[in-house]
Length: 217
Image 1 (cartoon, rainbow, N blue to C red):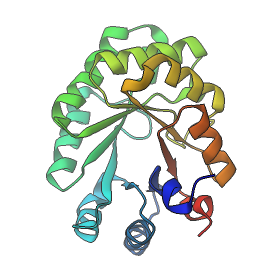
Image 2: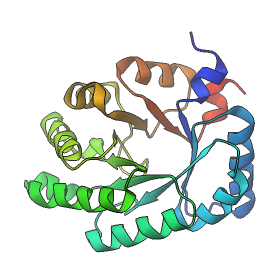
Image 3: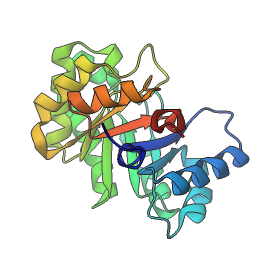
Image 4: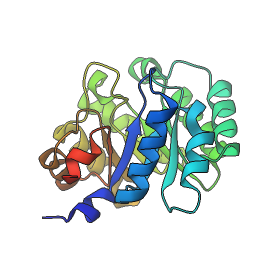
C-alpha cells in the first residue's frame, strides 16, 4: 500500500471545467504544493497564474492543447503550445485528431503529434487518445504513432467524452509503449482504489480532479 505522499507524486491535480474561477485555480495550486502532487493541470488561460503561484514549489504546471476535441489544425496546436510554454507551462497534454486515427490517416496523426513535440522541445508531451472512442487495435495504433513521433506519454482521456480511463485501455497502452514511455490514466479516477488499480495495470501518472479524496486528505 502506498503512503499518501507516494500516491500524490503520481497525480496531476486537475481543474479543466469551463467555469473554473481564479479562486479555484489558487486553491488547486495551494493544494498541489501542500500535498506534493506531481503537477496541476489547467486550461492554458490559467497557466500564467498557476506558474506564478507554484514558482519554486517543485510542482509542475501542465496544460492542455487542442482540448477537448483535438479537431484543430496542427498549426493551432503548435501556437497554443508555444504560448503556454512562454507563460510557464512545463508539461503539455495534447489531444489527437481522433477522427483521423479512426479513418486510418496515420501519417496525419503522427505529423500532428511530432509538430507539437517539436514545439515542446525537452518538455514533457502527453498524447491524449480518447480511448473510449477507440477499439483496442486503434488504441495500440495511437500508442505506436505517439511513440514514433517522439512523445513522452500516452494518456487515455480528456474526461469530456463518453468515458474515461479503464484497466483494459491502460493495459493495452503499457503493453504497446513498453517501459520507455509514460502512461497516464485520466477520466473517472476518483478513489484510492481506482488509482492503485490503474497503477497496477501500468499507469505511471494519474489525472484527477478528486485528488484529495484519492490520497485521503
